[in-house]
Image 1 (cartoon, one colour):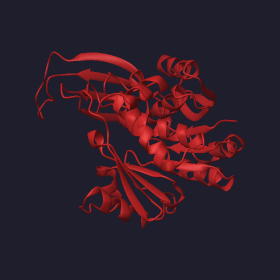
Image 2 (spheres, one colour; image 1 turned 135 degrees about the horizontal axis):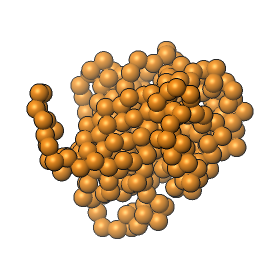
Image 3 (tube, one colour; image 1 turned 30 degrees about the vertical axis):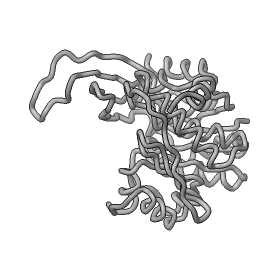
Length: 303
């Protein structure tokens, strides 16, 4: 039984820090390589666990050294991995991330074993899903698996938090199960067919797709919550950005942890904004995820 159950990806992240990204056909030398545990699902699970939520995860890794290390890392972070399996003859998912001096990143993902489970495998975890207060999912895994998990969780009275990343086509009806639907501005426009507009306009358009609530993350400007016929912005404190990789996952994990603890959406979004702000001040995805003390320290600090 868990407060938060994550259905999502587990990746090995290869992070290249470089002065600038190459132009097409160009070679840039002098990059520094670092390896980190990652995957949007695993990042969110670790983020919630680090913030003292009870967390379980359903995911897949390859039958290789990377996979074994990543599962061990999840366990050491306090995540229940009983529903994480190793798939023979499949590579562990990988993400190749370039980070420039301003902290901005560009990411290419090779899904590997992450795409090796679907609705049937989710069905096998129905008892665990039904016991969770909050189900968290992103879209680095099979969308049909996400939909089945969402229906199992919501039918059992749980809450479904859908982080619509990376943006892609999904089964009809999935969006309407979300409470909240979490997107950045790019993902919001994808869902709305490229429609322009301010975040408030985008959020209102997304509500028309059926979710009970929408959260639009705004990077250094914080986040916007739309629910119950109103919208509210939550500003972020000013911090020095080192690496934005994983900031969105820190936000989602913190949001899920607070909701699982019984907090209202406004309180949970405010807390998640602070968690995301802490995350950008350090390198890597999981290595940057904050503790409760760090989030509380930022909330009481200047800015």
